[in-house]
Amino acid sequence: MQYREMGKTGKKVSLLGFGCMRLKLLPQDGPVLDKTKIDEEDSIRQIRYAIDHGVNYVDTAYPYHEGMSEVLVGKALADGYRDKTYLATKSPTWDMTKTEDFRRIFEVQCERLQTDHIDFYLIHGLNQDRYEPIMKKLHLYEEAVKLKEEGRIGHIGFSYHDNLELFKQIVDEYPWDFCQIQFNYLDENYQAGLEGLQYAADKGLGVVIMEPLKGGTLVRDVPKEVLSIYDKSPQKRSPATWALQWVANHPEVTVLLSGMNSMEQVKENIAALENMAPHSLSEEDMAIYKEAKEFYLTHVPVGCTDCRYCMPCTMGIQISTIFGHYNQAFLFQNSVDRGMQKTFYNGLIEGKRSALECIECEVCLSKCPQSINIPAKLKEAHAYLTAEE
Image 1 (cartoon, rainbow, N blue to C red):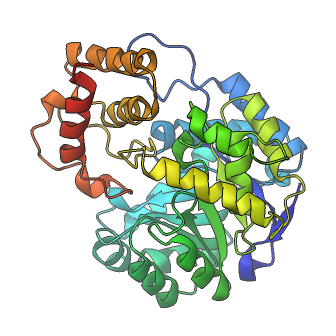
Image 2 (cartoon, one colour):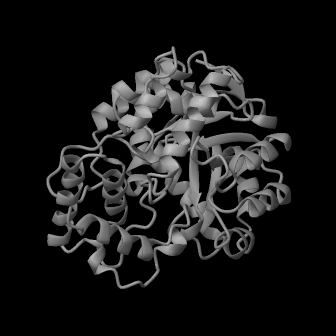
């Protein structure tokens, strides 16, 4: 496993981090998954296998799997695994109305995680709506510093979903140790993007990457056109390997998080990054990425990563599920596959969870880290998924 220095902290962390937002779920009936029903045995096995094979950075957050992700991670890091791992979790800014909420929630997280300290603690999901009105107003950074002085937090960071200008402002206003941004070969200039990555690294921050596979878009049901583009390379790589190695090729990247939920994915991702040094991709490789990117950007109508921050919808609409069906139907080039996605969507219509139920209350808009105009895109998705062939 490759290890990189987490900015000015000096800590050596594995290039691959285990992201725990999309843990394996138990089999369930019905169109709506209960994300609290984690397959504990298999998930713990995967996390420990990754640690045994060099991964030393495990990332979770207060809301993941409605809190059960932290509980699962606490169990996975028992039996000595906590001492082998840098543990990262995040403080939910949107759940805070007073300064005291920060420490109260931190204590809940430590209890869930079965630990008395967090190595890398992030103020979660900063954007225009949360930075000034919540983080600064409630003095959350200062509260994190107090916990750091008590030995409860090792290093303080933030995760981010908004424009480049605000990102630079946040980086400059506090002496952060690290940050976490979205970055993949489709999102090179999205949100903080490449310029933000380089800016933070130049300031001495470690940079953790989320969504290197864009919520699975770059590996799930990959269009045959993209596979044909990849096949132009003499080096045969899986779609996941292509995507992960593009991120890892940037020397400013410290850790890239992969939301693995099968042992096959864990092994594949470890192999993809085991010997991946910065600047190791060839000019021919970069030309392939450019061609694949051009195809995707003209064939994916909604930039949804299935983070589900927009949920629950006040009307019970399965927002990310609908966008998933829409994107997949749009990518598929044959009527059979498109028909399958439309059939799935018809099931949501029958269950009163389709775009038809949207009343345009716009509650979801402030929650979406991708800044998607959800009501408008729901109408668009409904029109496409109900259109006759």
